[in-house]
Amino acid sequence: MVLLQNFINIFSVPDLRRKLIFTLGILIVYRFGVHIPVIGVDVAALHQLFESAKGLGSFFGYLDMFSGGALKECTLFALGMQPYITSSIVMQMLGMTIPSLEQLLKEGEYGRKVINQYTRYLTFAVSIFHSLTYAMILERNGLVVEPGWSFRLLFILSLTVGSMFVMWLGEQISLFGIGNGSSVIIFAGIVSQFPDYVMKTWYQVSQGILDPLIALFILALFLAITAIIVFLERGERKIPVQYTRRIVGQRVYGGQSTYIPFKLNTANVMPVIITGAVMSMPMFLVQMFSDRFALFKWLQENVFSPITIPYNVIEFILIVTFSFMYTALMYNPDELAENIKKSGGFIPGIRPGKHTAAFFYYILTRVGCVGALYLATLAVIPNFLMMVITMPFYLSGTGLLIVVGVALEIASQMEAYLIEHRYEGFLASGSRLKGRGGR
Image 1 (cartoon, rainbow, N blue to C red):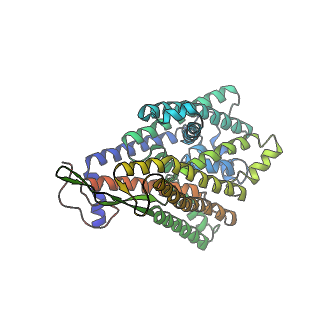
Image 2 (tube, rainbow, N blue to C red):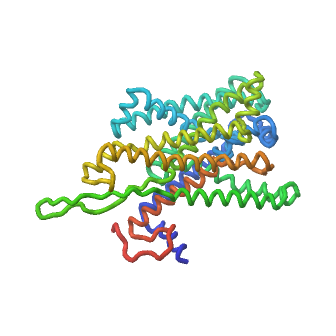
Image 3 (cartoon, one colour):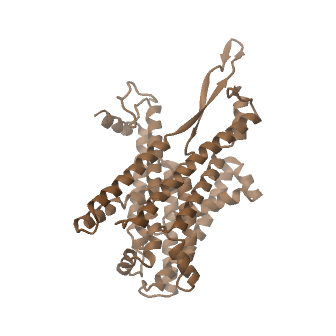
């Protein structure tokens, strides 16, 4: 009863209630769009091809998971957030290499708005490329009712408009809802397929296709991975900071002790999402030319398939790399050390200034290395499982990390709202605190 009451407290904070209802409303609109079909595609034949072991099934199964089943149904939102995520990655990379863009990143709110506008333009171009590639693959596999440029143009227009609208929905969640918009939409797409996964598993067990012990093993493994993610996401390294006492007039300032928390996984799920977007680009190209060139056919079957060792090695390396890169974007040890020095603080045993910055670099490298390895390892474990066990559904480690990571991020934000308004957090045990703040 106590935990239920704490959960009900979420709806007792007006601002949090509005944000939560707004986010749910946006997700409902998104799920409606997932079921709007694109004209001119033989959906029944597309389903058969997805279910088969050959053709598009092994390739688009990975991308379909992130679109919430929209890719398999060939609907208006088939591209999902992939073009926007890809464009965001490209703009971040360019921002670190092109001086003019790097200067924009340093100009605060104005620079951020300009970069966001460039990202939208690039998203439009990437959406056209993805939709054109998808249209050509559908035509090549005989899944189009009336092939030709009339179908291609209509298909490109439909999917591009859908992709831009999904991007706009994500931005609205980030501005007026709760959580990171793009992450929440990807989260909703993956979670929406969980009932289908359960039904497929139950059907195969009831028909004798899947051994019940194997089904229980799969369930236990995913539950264990989820528990490990939750446990490690809470891990952090606390760096103590001591502030010197200052006397100004008759007042005494400082003298207290605090700490700076460095999370084990400072980048959250962004390296996993970025890796998924990066991997989708070569997968699209390889699939597009696999019927014309033997080399691309070999790459599709032996390198760019989620159930191959080279693919998982590449994914592992990319997650580790993007973890370090994203951590470097989030934390600036020199700036952090300078701010502590200006505030009259110091780390016990470490000299202020450059020595403190070097100490932060050292800690971030050690903690970030552990976090990156943990993310990458958990991302590839389910893929290796699929190499040895025939599973009734495809849920990659990447998808599972996104689901758990986004859920924890949203829960943490709601917890912060509750504590701010003097309510007991729904993640903690205990009763609601007496009195209400903020009124």
